[in-house]
Length: 92
View (cartoon, rainbow, N blue to C red):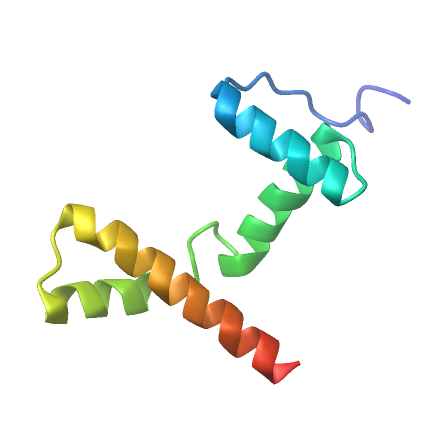
């Protein structure tokens, strides 16, 4: 493998808890830790093309209408993401 075709390497700092959760998910999914991280990053990029959630606009609209504060916005993101997952499961 030449330098032109080699995968890029990147050092990343993770909390111990996040690393453990990723490691657990990797085992569950039958992947290496590296493959799990790459798959999750790719999934994130595919979700919005630019790495932004496809629900970002919807989150903004709901936040504005509901008058949600910064802390409440995180919960709104979780709810909308969950709804998106449910809708995508029902469409399959």
